[in-house]
Image (cartoon, rainbow, N blue to C red):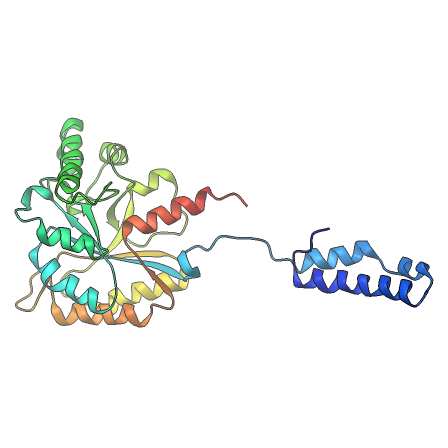
Length: 282
């Protein structure tokens, strides 16, 4: 019989000792009959932990993704620089029609960041026909892969303005593994169609980082996945979507201080982990 636990080792070790004593000391073999082997097996099974797969990589309490939308130069001039100082990776969502210089985005990819799609021309996707949607999804993916040859596949999408409808969500999953739109946190278990409805926490004026950081705490407490996204970061004057540098640093340092509890990963890698975990049969 295969022994699978420490309790099992102790139980069957006890039986082995009795047998050795019987033969070496010529003790009556009948003494073994006093040992209830069935009960010993029950003890073995009781202390054998059931196998399981961690909700999050590294058995962390929550997953955390930081994302940057809209192809802004300050993403690679400011945001990525600060991420590198803290050994963090992010997902950079670009609308490719507006990219005139691909060198910075190639550099971000080589640093370990994810370059993901934010559509081709950044339209309100809910106003488009099915063919127009296909063009937005396909052209963006094509541009990224053509201009960053090391990228074999683009798997993540973010809806412009966070807007989607039924037809948008049906078509987007034909081109990408996941798409982020609405506001909120994501559960550890996600059904297939829900990968087109990933949620995020947007950072907007008045840039109350205590509120954003509280959402990170909530994710840790409830074993969730939080995607925090920024549109721009500035050293200068803020506006509704452009976060002041000090507030951005406040959030990064808060996240870094909780890295024992957080799996910090890209949207691509978290989705890949969830899908793989949900396929495991134990």
